[in-house]
Length: 322
Image 1 (tube, one colour):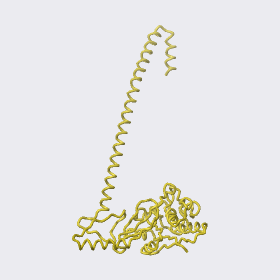
Image 2: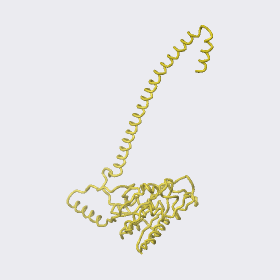
Image 3: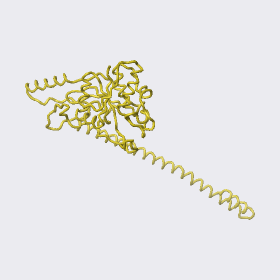
Image 4: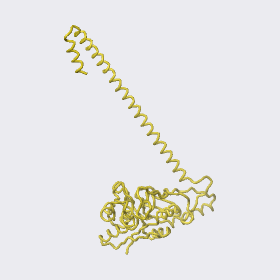
């Protein structure tokens, strides 16, 4: 454009109309510059207002979503923990347990009137307390070092309980059999991938027992990991009664098993997408206590926990003195 104006000026210079034409061009340039100077600030101001409005709307939406999520969580918790209206507090056992209970145990209010009822209830509570077992097991969280390392972290929890000061990362890196090609790995033989990776899967009881025994052999210890997979759920509580915490394969939060469709395993099955592993540490008259490396739950009813253990394949490992 500048070249065109210059050419026009040179052409006009040879005639008497050059001076008025140059003056007109100069006036037009000033008008264009003035319009631009006025338009740019207006556009900037408009853009600033739009960004402010968007930021305010986003903040409000986030606040509303957080409030809705909190309300939904409160309502869910209330439904899960409050007994139904008019119902009496059950006294479940492994054969007769409440439905869908996965939570921290809540103390039930007294439901009987009169001194006779109170004495009977007190006797039941004392009997239940005498039957309860809770081992002094410290939990260890698998994150952030091992986002998919619940199995080896659960094993480390039990090793620490027995007095072996090993850490989960050492167990994962130095002792756990694993295979990088997770899609081609048999979980009964090795971990599918690497527990330190975000994209990895799981292993079953065999590799965990192998890892623990390799570590115990290096320590010259008289303990041995034993694969007790396939045992009835009731036998798990017998181990705990003897002071032996049990490494148990479950699902996240004891929910129904789900499966990944990313690949098919060698036997034609689909891999679990919510496999998990916890340590059974105790029980009472209503359910059982666990140490969960993801800290998703710490207590579950017998019905829910036993069902989850069986749905996941009834895999379990104990570490016992030879």
